[in-house]
Length: 65
Image 1 (cartoon, rainbow, N blue to C red):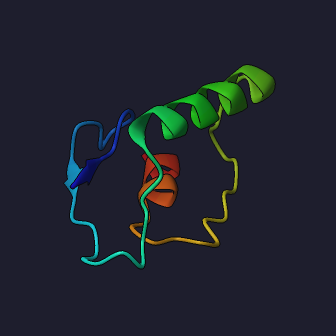
Image 2 (tube, one colour):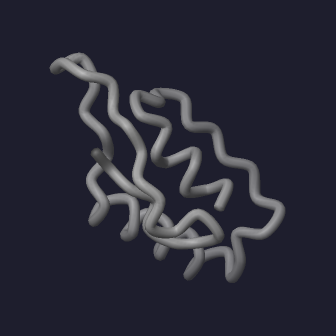
């Protein structure tokens, strides 16, 4: 299980596909990624994000929230 960290869906848990074929991005890595983007851009409102290697989709869902 992984979870959305912040935004409107913050705290919501996500089911991760079973097996070793997917390795979801850790909460800490996603938090760092979005903190960096926010520091560089000021706001993420209206920003387009492509989660091209979505295993669990956590990065894309985090961006949406």
